[in-house]
Image 1 (spheres, rainbow, N blue to C red):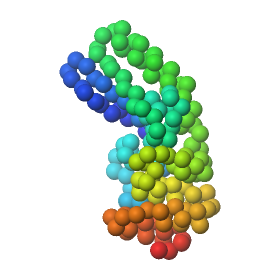
Image 2: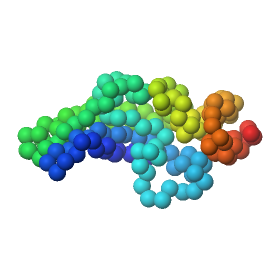
Image 3: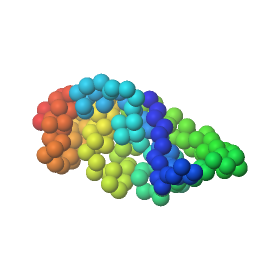
Length: 168
């Protein structure tokens, strides 16, 4: 599924400053990691792939872009130009980006290319391993899982290793 969400920053009663997040949510991956179905709607934090629309506008979907924040202040002029800018960005880069993720190998390749803090995020690495496994690459998935450090993720990594059939 596709998950749009808003991140509000410096919001007041008369002015709202926000970023727009887009994401891909794979229900079976969530259930494998957390051992239960999702209760309600997926949030950006639940998504396997997550990117800000502003990053796509900069051509940098891998976590190395500057944040793009929009300001809405309730005036018709602001609302109209803002709506047009966001619609244009969604149609031009947002929807085409999301449409690419029709196969597990595309999810795995995207997650392999993330940069910055996201590149070592254990959850992103687990989602990448699950996508690699779903794409028939159990050995590669096992190697991805072996890169996850930290005791707090050990039980999750072991559970995923069992699911993909590589043992711990």
